[in-house]
Length: 163
View 1 (cartoon, rainbow, N blue to C red):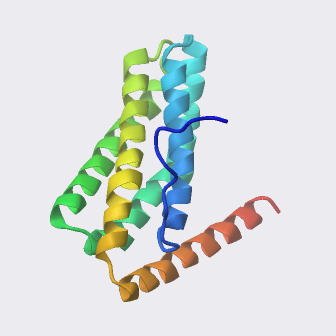
View 2 (spheres, rainbow, N blue to C red):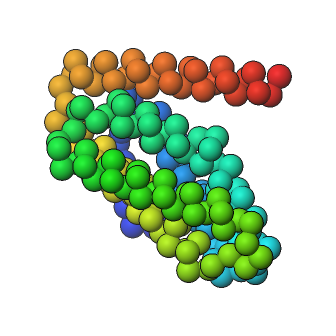
């Protein structure tokens, strides 16, 4: 049986949809870091996949977090969240340009992957648990209503896209 360095995280249902969205970001982060050690074609492929995921899911996820959580967190957490989102948006812009290069920079790919992973880990291990402790039940219920609406809209879009 595998041993894990972090115990499973207990997540309030209000935050589960946002946590679930993090899977896409983590997959992209790991692909970028792995591709950094690979050849040019694999680096271009990883950048293209990241750029697609950014446009299709990640940028919207960032907007949702800022819109839904921004007013519920401390000024310090909000500044970090918005700042890291802005930094990742800059790196995403650079990644979109780099995917057209013959030999994308391996160091830049690895740095993007590490930055994305670090941001998600901060949210999962620090920010979300802090919000769960600090928000009252009314706030969590209202947040849960909004995140449930997001998930329903995403399912509707997915079913439309695959029909």
